[in-house]
Length: 143
View 1 (tube, rainbow, N blue to C red):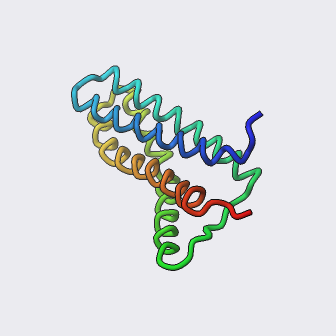
View 2: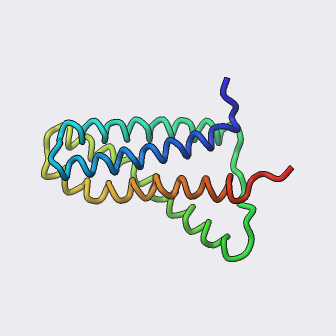
């Protein structure tokens, strides 16, 4: 059985994979490789959904970990955290709408909203990894 304490690392890996899939999907659509783009974006959505489930399970069992850093790094951390949380909330309906429009083959609308969805989703993925690094790697738990 997987220990709850392993979930932050798994979550960071899922965020990393989501970012890789998003970037790959973006590059593929620029090359007009539509089927490959679709597969990458659906995989990114699936990975992000797995992340959300894992994140909720972890926080249900472990609660929140306070940021132990002091000095100038605290406002940096909280700026990243707050923007990450707010955009993570926003990205869910945006991603769902973007996928829906593609599924319905409403590609002009899909393209317009994807220009907003993609950078926000990337930001959420990247800042999720940064938050993990700041909480669990730069300031590991003290004995």
